[in-house]
Amino acid sequence: MSLKEKEDVRIAISEKRITEAGLRMTGARRQLIEILSESERPLSIEDLSQRSQGKFDLVTIYRNLEVFRELGIVEVILLENGKTLFELTGEHDHSHHIVCRNCLKTERIDFCMGGELERYASSRGYSNLSHTIEVFGECPDCESKG
Amino acid sequence: MSLKEKEDVRIAISEKRITEAGLRMTGARRQLIEILSESERPLSIEDLSQRSQGKFDLVTIYRNLEVFRELGIVEVILLENGKTLFELTGEHDHSHHIVCRNCLKTERIDFCMGGELERYASSRGYSNLSHTIEVFGECPDCESKG
DNA sequence: TTTCCTGCAAAATGTTTGCAAGGCA
DNA sequence: TGCCTTGCAAACATTTTGCAGGAAA
Image (cartoon, rainbow over all chains, first blue to last red; front, side, top):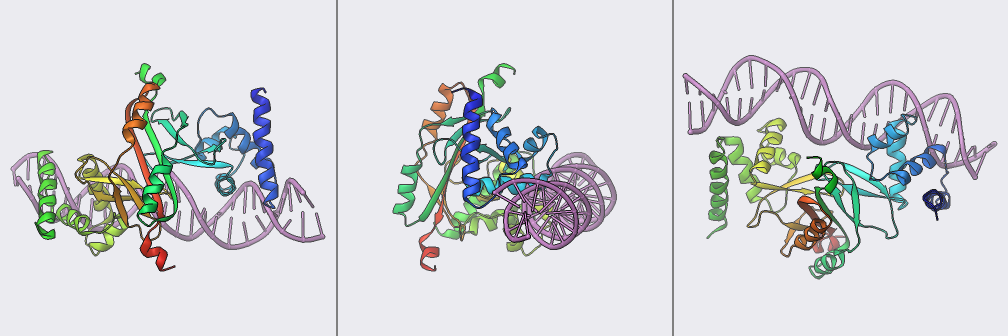
């Protein structure tokens, strides 16, 4: 399957979730998902605005990303500085990342230690658990560029 | 050692770091550290403003918390919603937490899995690593209150 | 008395809300 | 057609900056 085909599949899956929720697949939504799908890294609201050439109002992007998040189409990455990035959800419902502080390129970390953490929290009486795990560093490319 | 004595020790340690950095131990700094020291949970800027009865301008609180963070006197906790809380640094240079979404009460998690994560990131060529691990849930007290 | 710190005012960011017009199903 | 979405304007919340007066060492 080519990259383009993979992208089409991701968009189709997203569309299914949107319409099944009784919402509509608009031009803005399709294009925002395309941009996320083609990106090599998670994107901020501002990134999305720029990559869509300012075609959509910031408000539209905020609102749609919130919809995507609710529907599980995107997941949120919180950076050390409190800023948020969005990326299309992969095979798993959530994942963890190594994020380059410099270029924001991101790799998914396949193994998730969340289970152990949540078991511990559970043993302490906590319920309704979720967790965040992110690693920040400088990636090889940025490192070599000094 | 009484709680009050422990608090005095923490303040003394903080004062040492501040003066050794060529900075001054002012009334605002002493009181902000006292408030953090007496708090049963990490505090936001707004919390600190309220607990000091608005005695200090928000700007002063922002600036001092940033100083504290640089000196390692406080550590930052990033909530799921992107908001930040501060707590006095404990015995270790950093720690992880179970945070109650409702009352924001926080427990430190003693075991840190960061080593494994950072080794993995390191093997992928990343340098200058740091990581965040937080667990969010509903604490037993909040749960029982419905 | 030197240098740092604080408060005030204002600006810069980032995000949300209300409403009328436009677009998808 | 009917309801969902969008854009615009404005409100809001949060954080930062500049500067003059006040305070620690």
